[in-house]
Length: 363
Ligand SMILES: Nc1nc2c(ncn2[C@@H]2O[C@H](COP(=O)(O)OP(=O)(O)OP(=O)(O)O)[C@@H](O)[C@H]2O)c(=O)[nH]1
Image (cartoon, rainbow, N blue to C red; front, side, top):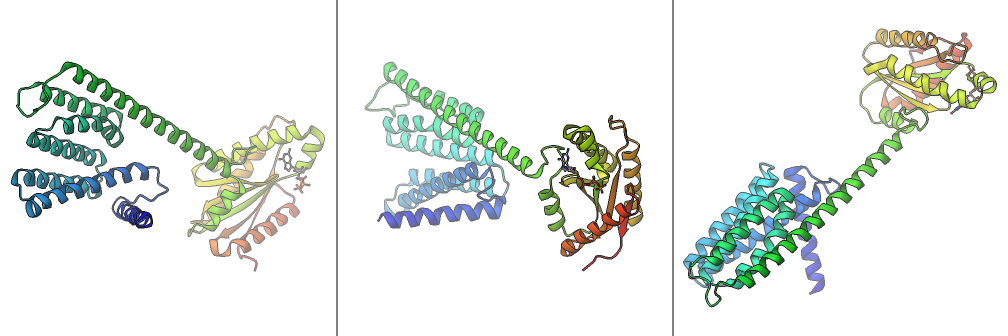
């Protein structure tokens, strides 16, 4: 029995998952998944129950008034389902569903003259409406519903037998109602707050995973991901600071760090939106530019060299870089990295503060 129930729940979850994925493009990892699945499960369950009672009141125990109520309820359930899946209107779908549930319940209560049902459903409304429609609309809806129930209970509709209007009971109902409302708001608020915290820390971790701590540039992992997972062709250039050991040895490691930070800024502003620069490691930087025109690319490398050698780093000496460059495609990634190293070596051998572009990729 228990196993059967588990299998049923698993199957239901799979149906919900595939509906959300197919119609809303939302997978389990999506932050919206939890809320959308709650709305979808509520719609499916309530519509299923209404459809069952419509069938019951038509076929099993023929009773036209409740058949019409449940048939309208089923139609509203389907309307709510299409608002969610076809038109992606989550709030509208939740609103139609709440209208359907409370409407059907009130109709049944009116028909059956049963006060207990009314009280029970009045108490469910604040919880469900806040969870489905959020604080604002949930509060509005359940407030209106409470007012309606109050009017309903106080009016002489003659459907409240054997109970009669009783201010004490009604005050108790209102207190319980408000308590449930506050509790569900609190729960929803803390759920959203912890979800936001989790999202923020995930975002921080994501940024940290791709950022170099010293310079704030992209790190090697990001640059390699970009180069390996893109189907575009790029030009890449490896930049290496000239005689950087001397800066460290003579002015200290802290000054060396400052140079790395300032140099990163100069490179970033010099490339602008034309390219991306990341720290490859130590005093090496990788530059990636879309591979449309070799002429544009070499033009950018020349201005980069000029901008850096003309920049004052405040250390009483110029700072220059050497660049090795090559055309890059993802499938020839490793070979391109070897070529770019060879080109950089050749630039260093040619007197530094220059670039070397190799045309062919070494095997
Ligand atoms: N301050 C600082 N120095 C670093 C960092 N990473 C690497 N370096 C230094 O960069 C220097 C690299 O020196 P070398 O590889 O000998 O090259 P170079 O002196 O720049 O000479 P060439 O490359 O031939 O022009 C070493 O002194 C490293 O300690 C860093 O994060 N901060």
